Length: 331
Length: 200
Image (cartoon, rainbow over all chains, first blue to last red; front, side, top):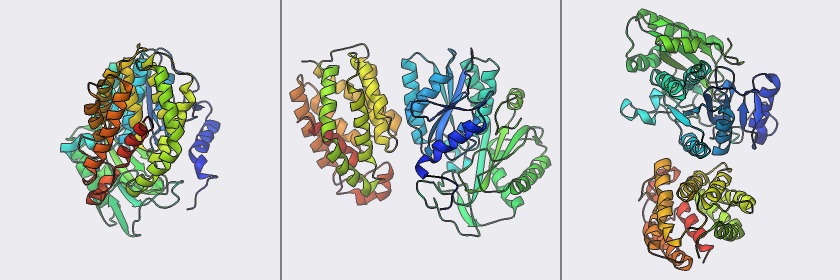
């Protein structure tokens, strides 16, 4: 293992400290366990939006704390769910009397712990709702869509929920917007190389130099198939096919495209991928609005990329375009 | 004598006194099937509970809530989360009450069982602690004293281990081992039995 770090035990905490030191106007570490990241100034008189999950995916989850995005986020260990205590702290810190929406990736630990945190919040008279994000088409068939994992599509749901809350919508309305973003978003990815969890110290999975795995999860969960690498244009076509198909995209539809790097893949290659996606969608008469290209939901130093599409309507487009104050969102 | 927050404190002390050797044994069992962190979860979880024991409120439900929070402050095995879910289910049933009659024990355990099934995804018959609890609920039904309830619970937890010994684990990481888990005790079921044994 070769990583820029001190002690693996402090990997998460030292990253959070770095985030806070670099962006003190955006991030504040808080909570009994110091695993709550929140905005320095709490929102007033509006719905709160929180998330939480395992670490090692920056900017998702904790990186997206900021005005117009998350109010607070519970932080776990690398690839391990936080327990319910920082989740409850996140909910309490985000509550301004109008209720709190929890954006949760569809993973057993995250779901179980958030469900508990919400029950605790309920006993303290804080109203909560949860969105369970399940955008990864490779992780289960359409008939088992509720089993699909949440991956890069989390970014869209977080952005839409944060913007809707910022706009002063009620909890039910924020939930409705975020849920529409969830339903309109699909993702599929490809892994080229493995990653190393600091405390494990060795690669999560082995993959040959000339091999790729289509549909691999962001913790190395098995994908759809593994085989020889392909030209970028063919990869783009393969990843896109299922997304456009499931979203029922037709000529004249508008989508946002997220070409997301998993950590170790250069921006150059993400743009080669985006070029191909752009051509394919243009040929179909599908309009791309607000493309996002870069590292949004990573898996440590895993090499590879994912493509997400969110089918837009006027409201989703506005919410996506709304300003956000966050070093990773960039506008 | 009814079940009160003081009874809870006595229980916490009894388990905490024996949790270190219990934890070591559970780690070893769990290491054969899972990631070997069940014992660590038990030890850290009960030490967290012991730390808040003196400050527990008389409201039995609120006391269970505080225990649930303390128990879940351990990362690692989902056993800790499930214990938290159980305690919380009991908390909801007993909020605002200071004395719980022992004959309500099966109902409270049933609420815990239902919550674990709803949240955890395992079913009865998968060879998990849910099966131990099912046996304990049946055995404690109608028992009106602590002594009778505990004796019946211990016997039922033993019986569940014997009943499931030759069956395969059907859920969680242990499932991967399939038929190899025949002839092995499920670590979570052993954990339930060990906790009950602290009282007898």
